[in-house]
Picture 1 (tube, rainbow, N blue to C red):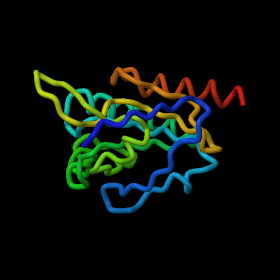
Picture 2: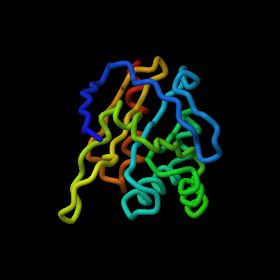
Picture 3: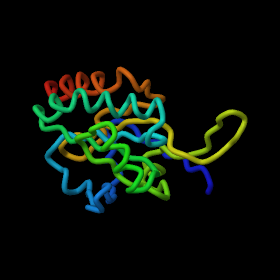
Length: 163
C-alpha cells in the first residue's frame, strides 16, 4: 500500500467515516453531529503505549460522559482483537475496526513506520477532536499516551467555553 499524506487543519470538515465496532454495529460520523467527538487512532491492541492511552480514556470516561463527549478508538485490528482488548481493560467506549486503514488514511494517520530496523505500513498515534458541527477543532500528532486523555478533556472544555 502506498503512503498517503493528508493535510488536515483545524477548521476543516472532518472526513466522514462509517466503521464497525467490535460487535459489528456500524458507527457513522453523520450520526454523531451535535456532539463533541474524540476520534483517536492507535497502532495496536494490547501493546504498552496503546494500553496506557486506552486506560487513560477509561479513567476519564465519566468526565467525558458528563460533558456528552463521544470517545472512539480506531485501529486496524479486527473485531475479535478489539473485544479481547476492551474486555481485558474494561474499556467503556467503542473501538472501531479500520482493517484496511482507509479511514486512518483519510485523517493522515496511516503510513510508513519504522521499528527495530523494519519498515511497514500502519497507524500513527494521533487524535482528532470534532466539534458538534463536524469540523476539526483540535488535532494531536505524535501523542504521548499517558497524559493524553486529560489533555484532550481540558482542551475540549476550553474550546466549548469559547464558542
